[in-house]
Length: 123
Image (cartoon, rainbow, N blue to C red):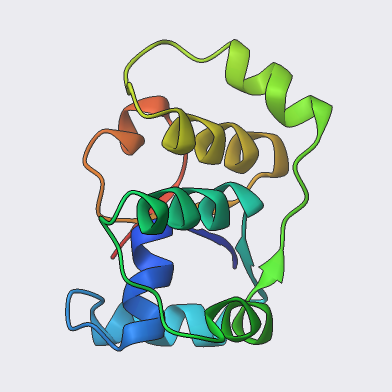
């Protein structure tokens, strides 16, 4: 299975948060590929900058160790442009576009994302 980890899932992964179920954690560990988008890193940094998220030192290195970086491409942007406006969050919309373009399953707890018809693994 090829997975794209949503931003909140990556945060839960790093912190060992119990919101991330044991089964989902195992699925990520056993995945053929578990990707993280630079869009998620950007979202984390924006939240940190605005005081809505506290990130530990070295968290970027930890993300690099645990996930494969999924490059952001023109194809992803074009896919994102074609999505219906079901979700107002531009970060999530781009993750959906990347998942659709790359045929990935998104690991998320966001109830809106499945409405795009993208495969989802519930966090």
